[in-house]
Image 1 (cartoon, rainbow, N blue to C red):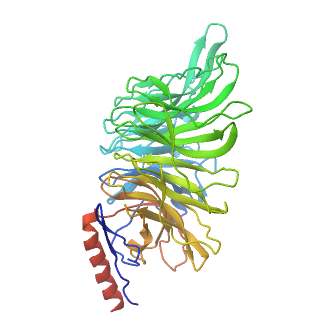
Image 2: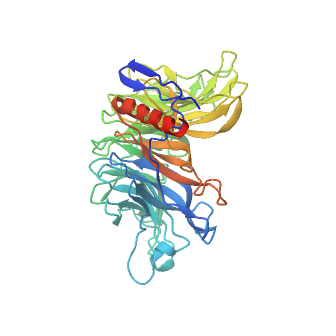
Image 3: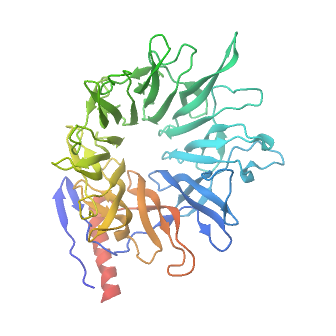
Length: 499
């Protein structure tokens, strides 16, 4: 086998394309909790939700015992953490005593984010004495200690309620949502909906502010904070009602200032019939620029989901560019992440000049404009169809996600990829040992130091009898200036294998 050429690209810094570095096998893959086919015990599936600059990753995975999922539902997960030194299931909320809820079939935990101090946040079911009492917002410190965060009231004397922390910043401020219960003199204890919430580093909860007409006539309303920046500015969505509170008008994108004040962000029009819409801010950078999605209506006519940016200085919605539409002007897409420079990534449906659908593509939008840059793919079928999506981006502009791989027009599978500033799709599988047992399928998180986390298929014995199973992974790609050494190392391995 002949070594393939390595192409060097120049631009804003030195970027190595790496697309031809097949079977270089120079990057180590670190697995999340594993599954033992012999005993039927361990972990499979789930999602990698975050990774920090030290390479500590978090997420959740299904837990198995004796070959069967351990839980009362088919999607019962446990929060997990892993890095280059090993992996672990993170503890649930434990109240002491002889009863251990960690083994309870009703126990479920999930971790959604981690900061550079190693603090992770998510939720844990609360099962005192074996009785399920809902879910509680949860944090886990770097040493693995679990802490129950504050809630916004309980439904009864038994303590039933639900809440989850979804994001955390460098100082330990977390945001998410919590069920709100409020006592009414006439009706007693009433459920007022799930409300956007913020927790300080000590776990104290604060209900974030409501937008105008953010509740119905009975005081019920729904909202969630999905992301938070270093200053404590949070973004997400909130339900909006008519002034009388008699009718919901859909969900609106929201920014909450550091003091908790809510600011409704603009959308891309209302429907002609119900005068409703849906919008949500999904990410925010430290400058306060937010990105997300909004339904678009043109003269009341539905045009699909569009990627949107909201600048920190106001509420105006800037529609980001797309990759074509149907003949009637409909398309679908969203911006899911934004870095410090204001570069956003996400995905958009692609249509050709004749309005034929060509699948979903990963997209980048630069801060200076609105044009959509289609990121590279790993082939298409005979009709030019494929799917790809960008899931995250770091400060260096490295985006990660996934793309379907095609060979001679036939689908091979889904592959985890990253894109540098040149937009070339680099299949992460070309950078690892082909005999490692791994097929990396989706990359979902990336740190500023190049650590990437995701999910793939892992075959523990290669061509042996054990089947491959879905397992969480992490690896680190070098800084752009180190790509040359990576390439040379790959060529050396190729020479030893095939020389």
